[in-house]
Amino acid sequence: MARVYNFSAGPSMLPEPVLQRAADEMLDWQGTGQSVMEMSHRSKAYESIIHKTEELVRSVMKVPEDYHVLFLQGGASLQFHMIPLNFMTGTKKADYIQTGAWSQKSVEEAQKLGTINIVGSSKDKKWSYLPTPANLDPKADYFYYCYNNTIEGTQFHQVPQAAVPLVTDISSGILSQPFDVSKHAVVFAGAQKNLGPAGVTLTLVKKDFVSRIPAGLPAMLDFKTHIDSGSMFNTPPCYAIYIVGLVLQWIVDQGGADRLYAANAQKAKVLYDYLDSSPFFYSPVEKKDRSLMNVPFLTRTADPEAAEVLNKKFVKEAEAVGLVNLAGHRSVGGMRASIYNAMPLAGVHRLVDFLKDFAAKNA
Image 1 (cartoon, helix red, strand yellow):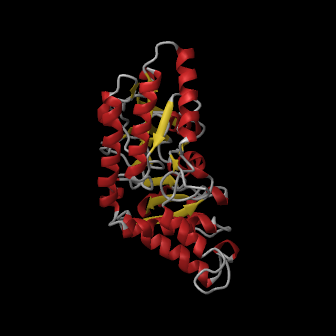
Image 2: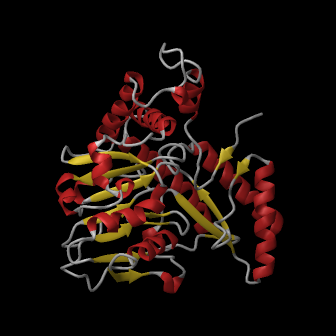
Image 3: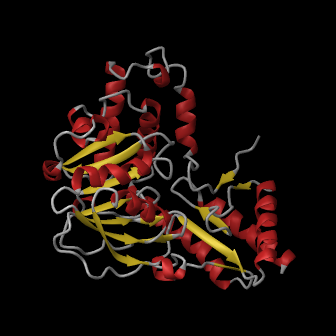
């Protein structure tokens, strides 16, 4: 069966060279006579894998030496609780900017542990733009934002300005464009969007921020536990970490993150230019805040029932020609194309050709 163009928001498509290498090494990783899936995480073979993956994270993301690199479990959802539990420990107050479903979930978790000041929200316009932060608390323990909103299709192209430490969820935007880790105290990303398979969460923590962690936290929820054990307090998601390493090496082979950014900008331009010129489809997101990675789009149909019928027809017919996972998130409907690093330009052109054909037949 031929490979499809997979526009899923996550788990998402991986680079074919990565999948091929993983297949080649499935039964025998570098002469060990065993799969990475079978290795003891305490073995020298696996230690070399996780150490190499950390080296690649530091190199590709330009992570400064004064940051810990952690490979954790529980996804971004667990980070929503771990971060305030560990770091909202001074004034027990934090500033959060609400820009979509995932930042809203992070607020709900943080509110269980302290006082949350909402410094901006785009809920008034269905999350279609990024608000300007206002009324920031100079005594907040940190300022939290979601770098790229997977569901709503918005992205911070500039780091927000705040006088307190910055914390950000970069799950679906990681390595999509230049990003300055050094401006942040904590950066985290679920791998399944743009970095690898589901099961591992990459978290970067500035070393001087660790002093905020209180004593007596549950071991698995304490960042110190994972720092002190080199991400191996318990059995880590070994195979997922191995694949992240392969993806990072693929990025190096492509010429690095800057080359990926140029390719991502080109892909996004092709898709957005069509949507902006189409009398049938449109992007609901303000141009200045559009994501390079996640592109929601709608039909210009006033009747909600008719729109839903068209949407379902679009998704079904697209799947029949090898363009899969184009349905919008269940909370917002419509359609969405996630064009992560692994999506080739040819896939975006195929999608635009299909959009044109569908519009001509259904206008």
